[in-house]
Amino acid sequence: MRRRDFIALLVGGVVARPIATPAQQASRSIARVGIIDDAPFWDPFRQQLRELNYVEGQNIVFEYRRAQGNLDRLQQAADELARIPVDVIAVFGTPAAQAAKRATKTVPILAISIGSPIEAGLISSFARPGGNVTGNTILGSDVVTKRLQILKDALPEVSRIAFLWNPDNASNAAIWEQLRQSVPSFHLTLVSLQARKADDFERAFAQMSSDRPDALLTASDPLHQSHMHEIIEFLLKTVSQGCLRSDRTWLTAA
Image 1 (cartoon, rainbow, N blue to C red):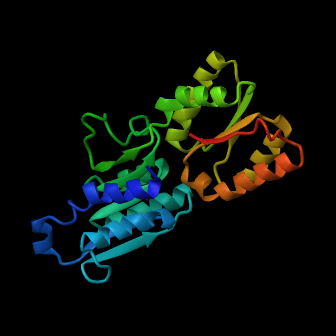
Image 2: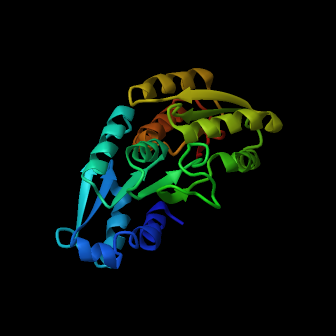
Image 3: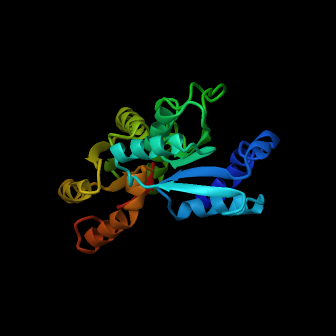
């Protein structure tokens, strides 16, 4: 299922109910939804709400705050939304979800594309999550071995892989640790490419050109996703220049 479709399904099945209960409708005519770092992937979220008869400006208002992956700004954005307060805070990725959880214990939080929600401290367990966070997980660290197996099946000669990740993202850190433990079983060498902020990508690209990995694994960190076009452009450029082999270069999201 595509990310757009899943977000639409999730908001229809989870979010709409908390902001549409009879008690709330009786006490307030307009529902407020806070969104951190608005992007095109939130369009199906808004579309599904429209299909549930939430019309912006009539019975629903969106409060937007921008952080662009900056940890300090993420916390500031979450704190502002909690103080309004909004009825739901919608976030993408682990750092934003953690910031929202620190900001409020009562406002429901819809967290999309979380790699390792338990390790990140967002929920207690899948059976009994507790707290005020709901959403979906991409099971990042839990499927590392499967991704490595698929990679080896597709490119048997691969021996050196790089992982582009954000050490400030707890889900990314869990994936990195699982990768580090798993690669020996596949006779692979693992290279760490770290990017905490936008300025770090140039250094990561330079390291990749130097280390010349056979494959690149990426994470669903919001900062990295927002720069994915640059990552792909770099790979295409380096392959065309012969810096990386076109028959072995592989890009996969983790």
